[in-house]
Length: 182
Image (cartoon, rainbow, N blue to C red; front, side):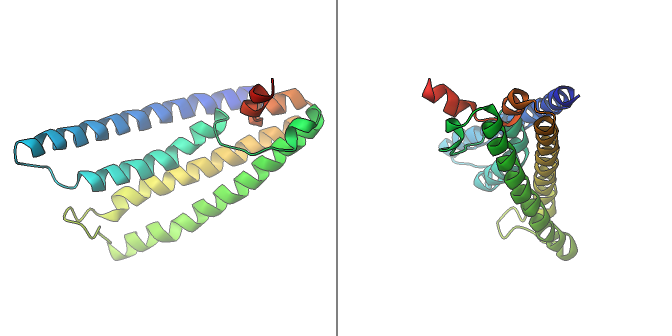
């Protein structure tokens, strides 16, 4: 059951990652076109603002994909010295801490969006972008990451309680460290 859930979450997040990737490609094309237009004396204007928004959205939405692909950086000096049970404990502990941090970020992101909604805030730039257009998907990305992190943590805890330590390591382990030691 746990494996099926993680595989489903990975499939969903691969779709999200593809959408984010296409968005970044579109942003890069927009910036490139603006650079070319500057060479002939004109410009769209605001490309740096739009690129900044694209990076914020890519970061908040891309974190879930990175989590499920074991791409987040971890410094595990002690983990490698333990057998599978000890490594599984470290892995689950790191997921509990990460989930706590990400849930806190998602909760703290809400007042930012709420203020923009209530005040009708706009960027203090020539584009005067309504901030809710950017902050709503940004907030949704953090909420998505919090949900993915918590679900992954529950799966890891379930595997730990079932004494399936190798499966726990496969889902939330730190493979880069293992490869470096071999």
